[in-house]
Length: 353
Image 1 (spheres, rainbow, N blue to C red):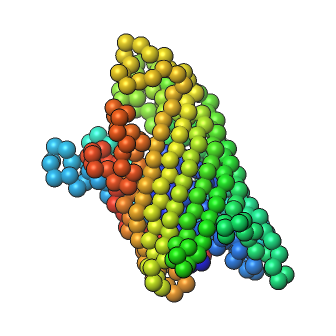
Image 2 (image 1 turned 135 degrees about the horizontal axis):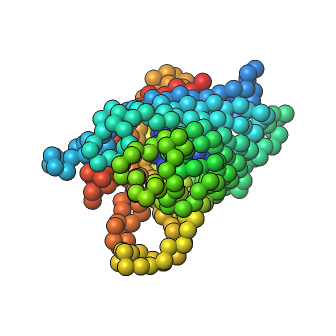
Image 3 (image 1 turned 90 degrees about the vertical axis):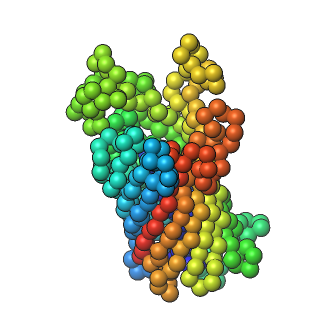
């Protein structure tokens, strides 16, 4: 399988991970990484593989013609991944990323203009069942030509956002299914499901001010709610479920395209009763949020092996429903409220080794 086949899906998954501080072995490109890295690296003299990528992206709000509504934003993202093929079918990987903001809009929510943010260091252990064929280990193929894998994941809260939310770690489990060779070998279809449990020191929406333990705290800032308390964990989730679907296409010798969609359901720690301040659309009960991520993109392999490639994509991360909970949002581009910067456009350069 060419190295660049699922590159675009991996970029989308990384963008979602950095934005939401989520690290999961069920990222949309997991199947591609397992098939290539485990089978090839395990047979190499040094069973180590990895990837490095540099991506530049502008927000959809940058393109708004109305100056009053324009919300320009430009970011650079560096991603790193290293994998060790312990044995055929069994792989241990570590990944991280760093994001540098180059253009900050006035209401982006960024704590500091031109900020630099490191992601959480993620660890994943994945296993793909194997069979012996002609004395060699090959992936076990289910009826219909489907290849399966399972995984475990965790992370270190190295990002400022995780430290701000008092995150300790997370534990996740996943199942991935992949079908290659569709339409005369032009398409690979992959599906993943994951469960993730987060662990935080604090689950309440506020906590006492401690500047040494709250690296994002600003005296008098929006997070300073007064009375010696700071808003930090209103968005903390206790656990989540995620489904992901990726279709990757090979176009000629060096061109590739991919479309990916991921749907996540997160449950909070708290139960929220209705009161006089509740929205007309609010519901009582345990806090929950539904979010989706979608990407469409193309890549071109600069080398014959496909290890070095450039890519371009449109990426969207948004709530599933509109603010009134009546209309589904289109998952691959925000046609309703571009200044909200749910959508972005990016160019990337990556290399696999």
